[in-house]
Amino acid sequence: MPKGYWIARVDVHDLDVYKTYIAANAAPFAQYGARFLVRGGETVLKEGTSRSRNVVIEFPSYEAALACYDSPEYQAAKALRDPVSEGDLVIVAGYDA
Image (cartoon, rainbow, N blue to C red; front, top):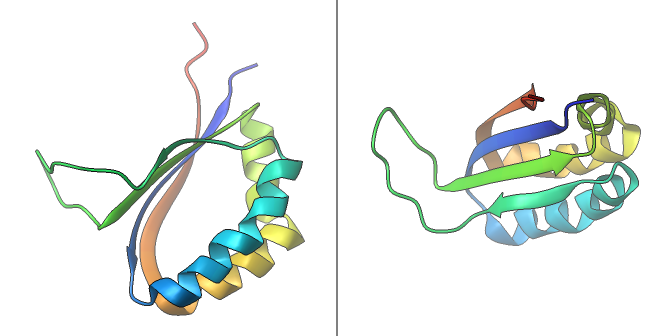
């Protein structure tokens, strides 16, 4: 079964409020087995457009990645993030060769 990944690009407008989102997302991420592969960090734009923050989160399965996003706990955390940021998020199934 292929792993699942969240790939997010975010511009944060209020870091103090955004930190409450980070604290609130810890429980659902733990519940669904999330593991951060990229969380911020230095970037270089080579093509296209970018945002100030990039995140890649690995889940044990694509189904777990979807379930985490749809969970009431994550949606409550997301409600904290939405007013102070804008971004893009895709959930993708990993390549299972």
